[in-house]
Amino acid sequence: MLHALVVFFLAGIAEIGGGYLIWLWLREGKNVFFGAAGGFALIAYGIIATFQVFPSFGRVYAAYGGVFIILSILWGWGVDRKTPDFYDWLGAAVCLIGVCIILFAPRSA
Image (cartoon, rainbow, N blue to C red; front, side, top):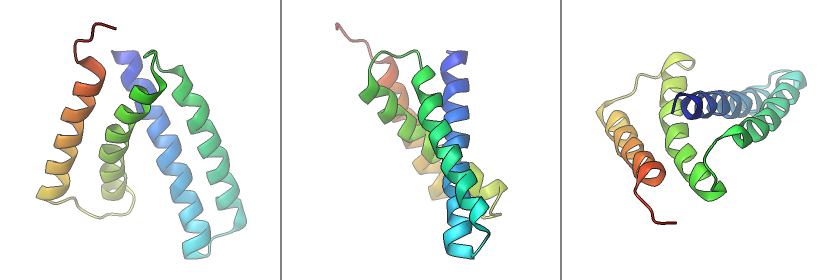
C-alpha cells in the first residue's frame, strides 16, 4: 500500500509540476526553459506511473485521476496560494472514495 501511495504521489508531482511549468511558459511569458523542464517532468510522470503494482492500466489511471484531483487542489493551495473551499474538499473526498472503490473492490478476476 505504501509503495502505491508513493508512486501515485511522485507521478502526481511530476504531472502537475510539468503542467504548471508549461502553463508558466505559455500563459505567463516565462522563459522557454520552463516549457522544456515541464516537458521533461511530463515524460517523467509517464515513466513513474509504470512502477505501480496494480496489474490493470485502466484501473491505475482511473484511480490516479482521483489522486491527481487531490494533489491539484493541494498544489493550488501551496503554490498558487488559492485556498480551497468546502466544495473543493468535498469533491476531493468524493474522488478519494472513488479511488478506493476502483482499487480495492473485491473482484473475482
